[in-house]
Length: 145
Image 1 (tube, rainbow, N blue to C red):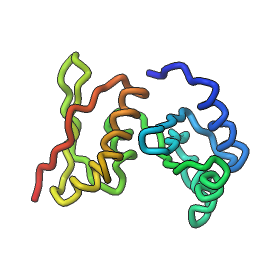
Image 2 (cartoon, helix red, strand yellow):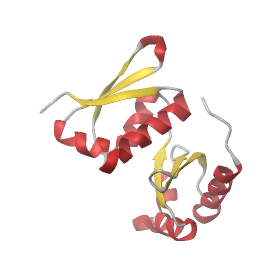
Image 3 (cartoon, rainbow, N blue to C red):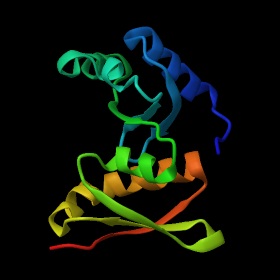
Image 4 (cartoon, helix red, strand yellow):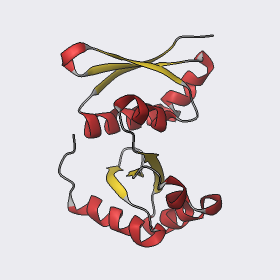
């Protein structure tokens, strides 16, 4: 599920296309953490990042904000796995028809990375899941040691 993309987001998507020659499906401007999150078309991630991250650095310089990129997924599970990469996601527990989901990761030591500094990664997961799949992330839990 996609929502309407505003003028500002369209401008940022076009800027990514011009600078990196990659295709962004969606873009979220997160003013709370002063960043722009791009959802990049499957297979275009390497092109978007560039050699040694040059494209991301150039975009950050031009736009004046931190740039984060996530590759789209065919399913909600694959999409969440792409957001949390390199953390291993075991499963997504769905709360039936309510749209609430719980993300289960493999290692407890990766929980801090999944949540992020000041909750930035958790907020990124919530924003993207709500925007792309109309799913509300309730919490992120660890199953293993």
